[in-house]
Length: 230
Image 1 (tube, rainbow, N blue to C red):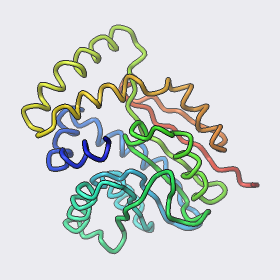
Image 2 (image 1 turned 60 degrees about the vertical axis):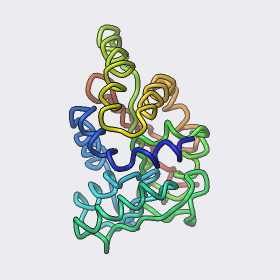
Image 3 (image 1 turned 180 degrees about the horizontal axis):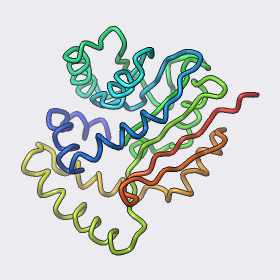
Image 4 (image 1 turned 90 degrees about the vertical axis):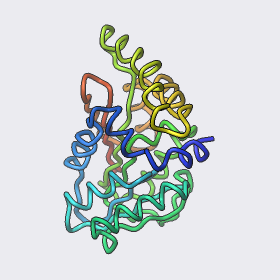
């Protein structure tokens, strides 16, 4: 289902993300990238890379790094490759088809692994976190950027009206598959509470888990570290 949804909205995906988030998605990714630390492999894995926005931001902000974007929707990967070529980053960013639950790299291959607005689409969230933890080096980071339903009651009600009614209407005007944006609200509203998700990260083997609340709780950035002594 997820593959079908994202294969039909790929052409308008970037525009709609920026438009419907009032361009806050750009600031959220930059916040995540600023928290990244590279110290051994100087490699970053962007899981569920989509059109590679996080991968590109990481490469631009950390010029010594090599980046791999992993996804399983070919249409999104094709757009990602085109964007990377336009930005002359083909030598530093590679796009690879693969499954977040079976990442095709050996253990300890990256200093950091991240996923931006993708883990809500993975039913086995703990499994994806375990795989991301496996492929980072001891002391490396796993970063998750994800939208959530705001906790502030008044703002939560306004946001729910926007996400359930206005957002799909706007999406219908621009997207060949507006039902994808009904799915967006469902996936956000059913995403684990922030403190529950930090527990998922610890259960995946991560320690010193940090949580950053962004834009009144619309989005959270989670960062966990792989133990240095396994």
